[in-house]
Image 1 (cartoon, rainbow, N blue to C red):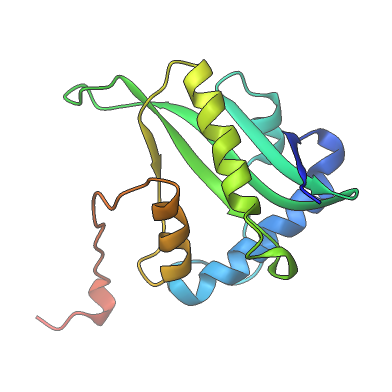
Image 2 (cartoon, one colour; image 1 turned 120 degrees about the vertical axis):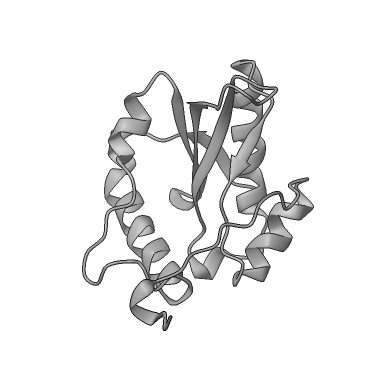
Length: 157
């Protein structure tokens, strides 16, 4: 059975907050800069209420199995496009991974972006997350820019 993809509602917030906890825990091993303890990445209710953002969920037999948002962001004046849709909060609980649910969410986010006349889509993914990179590449994303960091506490000069 295929899940339905729909707009998230305030009634989904409890489950979506557990998704956010799962996302933070999945990303902690890939990002030493994430604080210890409870971390809140997103204002999920703000996405639900925003005119310039959308939060979708995939629901299967009454259970949420995937999430993702798109937010329209103004871009730098020297780029060919004035704004882009930034995608984030792409999460599928472990027991539901590998079923194509993330692609359903991405397809909905891309369709929403088109209705807003946004053609440039961006997202971030950790270099150390090859399965996510492959999944995004399957939907048409290409590597574009590598962000680098240096912690001067670890630097001997």
